[in-house]
Image (cartoon, rainbow, N blue to C red; front, side, top):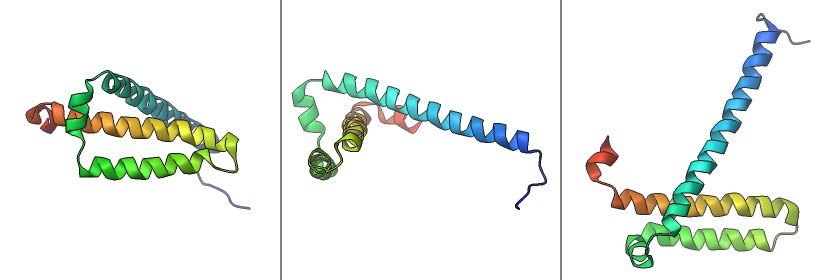
Length: 110
């Protein structure tokens, strides 16, 4: 049997705290990315079109193929969860790309 020289209670609680902090971190990431995406959705369409570059077009093509593969998947229950997560990721990408171009360069460097 494998054993450890450290107190297993400490290891157990460190493991629990690590998992908890990762879950909280993912929750906060999704929350802030969602809020940023909502702000981006209410921006004018003209400004959003001007912010799209070649990298954004590649993400649009890849995201479209990914979302189509999720929609036509043989496992709908798992696919719907992946769809929500991927949709948030793609919206967050475009909102971050847009706001990085809008923000002052000095503020971004800081």
